[in-house]
Image (cartoon, rainbow, N blue to C red):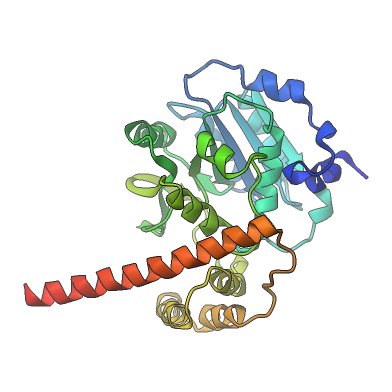
Length: 329
């Protein structure tokens, strides 16, 4: 069994904690370039055309991260070789490969995507003076002020736990209501309260579950439209399987009506019924079960589902009120 696989099955501190070089983590986080230390975990697969520019955009930040860790999910192109060259810009740059994932499917929208992030988070499990973790995709370009501008939002609001800028694809911001998965910054004090092992959950709806947990804790989650980041490849619909999106909606307790409305809107936006059909199929899929969840995870999912039902009702009520008031006044 190779070291990297041993490390991965040891996520959440269940096994193989000895695999981590604790001295490396401690030394890394004693770099005092800035008062606020940021670790970037970049994930990607077959991104040879964009990964160099993505990593360089981090190096050119007004407030660069102290370390960049690229987790490669089995690329068959030159992504790893290019990443190894560009991470040398950082004193603590590193690439982790998953060769057993070569020719495996893309994990976009699947619970296993959290595994990639966890593999990065686990490298810094023992580092106590990290202020923020940022999750980034290997096809995203950040303007030079992105990190500093986002940090300023955290400085201004001590309750802010998770935030991102607006992801621009073909000149249009696509995440108006929730932080983007790419370019998302998570404050470490919240992450440590959420998970003692700095480990993200691996089940459908995990990204939404983290954000709803933050809000239930009295923390804030936000997306700032004035802080922009850019996709270097546009919207790659071929990699998106909306079956997983449908399963996530079911896991989070979205009503059938909400799912159907989203399916109709997607048909209009995508100019094809295929995504909507996949969404509906995923929603009614029996794939999502409670069987592989621990008791604590079940409690979290239940709490999230209750929260989303209330959120859904409140959102619809506010929307209806807005429509009525606009017609009356």
